[in-house]
Image (tube, rainbow, N blue to C red; front, top):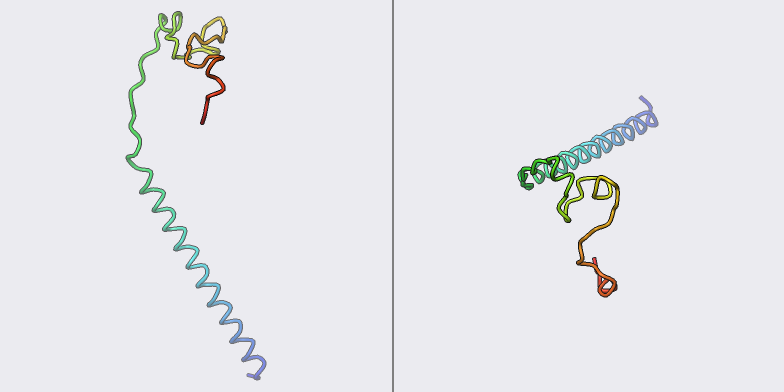
Length: 94
């Protein structure tokens, strides 16, 4: 084998080895990320049973509950809540 062929062969092997190392690092990082996501997502949320929706609750909804589109069956959309008023609207913050 000529010197040039050997040089090309060595360079090819080195590129292949470098790519394999890179692929192994990416695979390891993906595995760590996947394990972290799965481990971090379990058991953190508490499920509270929903109260049953009855015909009476739809006809006369609690002011804080918007069970229908725009709160009431007639689509009124007015909120009887009075926590936000024109006098304190400028004080709202996130």
